[in-house]
Length: 208
Ligand SMILES: CCCCCCCC/C=C\CCCCCCCC(=O)SCCNC(=O)CCNC(=O)[C@H](O)C(C)(C)COP(=O)(O)OP(=O)(O)OC[C@H]1O[C@@H](n2cnc3c(N)ncnc32)[C@H](O)[C@@H]1OP(=O)(O)O
Image (cartoon, rainbow, N blue to C red; front, side, top):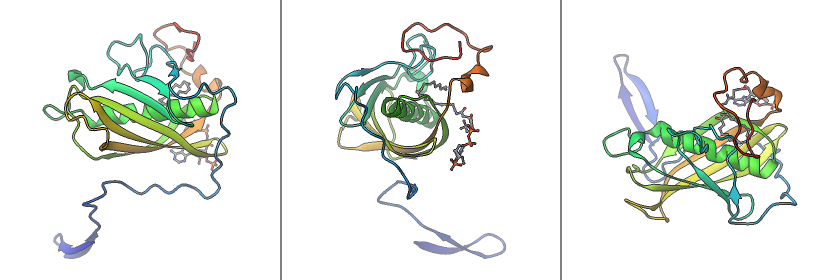
């Protein structure tokens, strides 16, 4: 904790500095329900299909997208991977923060879908940028559902560099928490006039 005087009015300003643990506080509700493990869960290492082929996060028919690929992990964990392409640059040589946030959004949405078998949309996302992430790094995002309250789904995710420059699977380079909301197919009805393609796989969920 650091206290100092600042500004023309000499206001007392108190700032808490997190030198050691760069992570924000995210308080889960007391009435959180942990979802049942799906009876037909394939076990660790199974591919988790894209949810929509035009999706910027996971679609294989989206050339400018992240092209994230997902597999199941232990329990309800979902593991996503992508390589930080040069076009995702923010500061010279490093990933743009918004790209990392997009990856966390996608990864936690996929974890909701795998655990609950329901469509979800993002209501709130938080992110901690713990280390600079170089271009060419292969990022692995491990995400899970912490629990649900009615239609609200609370999630967590951590990113590590597992291949390429600065790879170290023991170092968390970023982390995120999310609040997703379970929605019905009518949610996507509003988008059907703007869709720019047709589903290309059985697993595709889109507005068409
Ligand atoms: C990109 C498309 C994704 C396609 C997914 C296809 C399905 C595949 C399935 C799965 C894979 C997922 C992979 C996708 C990954 C990417 C996901 C994205 O980036 S989604 C795009 C960004 N997000 C939006 O565009 C939402 C825009 N917002 C809305 O449409 C509404 O606000 C919505 C649906 C979130 C809530 O509206 P209401 O009318 O249905 O429900 P109300 O009653 O307002 O909220 C329900 C509960 O949630 C709380 N809530 C809602 N928003 C909140 C917020 N921002 N912060 C805190 N609480 C919030 C409320 O207080 C309420 O809580 P109480 O049950 O009463 O306790």
